[in-house]
Image 1 (cartoon, rainbow, N blue to C red):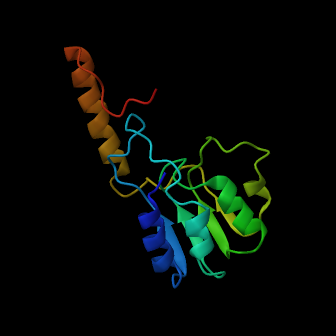
Image 2 (tube, rainbow, N blue to C red):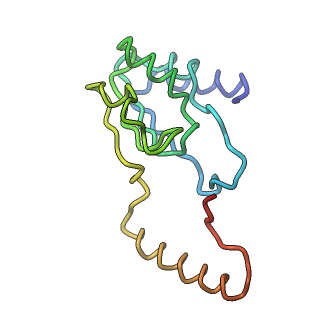
Length: 140
């Protein structure tokens, strides 16, 4: 949970914002301690009615139930969502049915250097596997 001081700061900041883009540092890997619900109902309620939320962070950083409630009440103009608590997003998720929501398949990390970075990780993991060392970016 986010401390109330942080929510207050974010709420004041968001009152005049048209868009909120949510990202998290690269250090927030699956093996790192989770940061749950950084963007919750208090922060979403502080956003103006014509605001959009763009979530390219990690699943669980945005409170999906609170976001869904705000969208269904037309309290936000819309959202673009690349990550979810459960991936892939279940077929029966209400986010699929909302006209003001764009759902993407957790592809926001793809950049110009994406394939070079993957090749670097594969080379490093091969070296580590041969040496008997733990792998990097291991998803369990």
